[in-house]
Image (cartoon, rainbow, N blue to C red; front, top):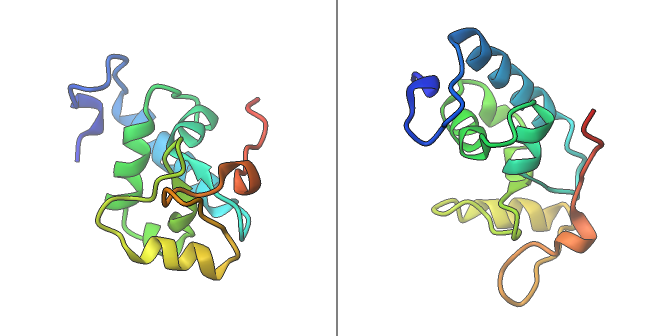
Length: 117
């Protein structure tokens, strides 16, 4: 998949940048602690491309081997889980992640937000 040609990314990536971004995303996701979550946007910012949060989701969905990582610990900025992945909530609850009455992760309690260098 050629991410760098997608229309919703005004700042295009070279093929080399796409590969580096993918490696960075997988590395960041592998570090999310049990019982914590982070957002697509924060991962994109940590990887150096803050406007590419959608690409984080696509990277996790389409990269071989990503299913071995704790991808269930990635939610959107409101704490919503991925649409169509009902098991995500179960996996998070098994780790002690709590949800508010609206079905969103309690981000105040569970957000993992390492410093952006």
